[in-house]
Length: 116
Ligand SMILES: [Zn+2]
Ligand SMILES: [Zn+2]
Image 1 (cartoon, rainbow, N blue to C red):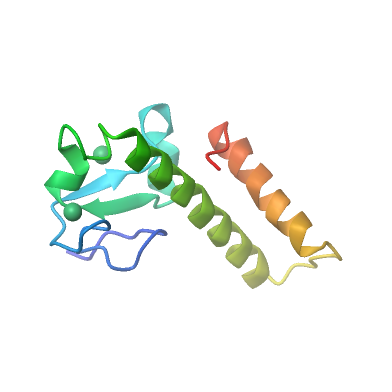
Image 2 (cartoon, rainbow, N blue to C red; image 1 turned 45 degrees about the vertical axis):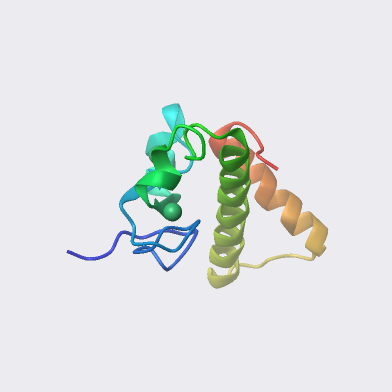
């Protein structure tokens, strides 16, 4: 079986937080966003501790949650811009700030909110 694909890290066999062998793949945006996030490969390899520990796991720790969601948005925007660049379409004359804003807005269109 091939490794799962993630747009957050290419090191999918190791916990993103501590580097131990991956035990779970965490859907960084979950609930009703789970399906979209799946399509977009917004998944993060975690050990069981950093996934589900009652204090420090991403499902129980607000800081971990906020940072992982902001990271998901940043990586999604990076992917959006990379695909746009690779598409060869006429990119017009937008400034870098405009590109960043466009990619942020595209994220919000898809997921309904900003995480950073
Ligand atoms: Zn870990
Ligand atoms: Zn999870």
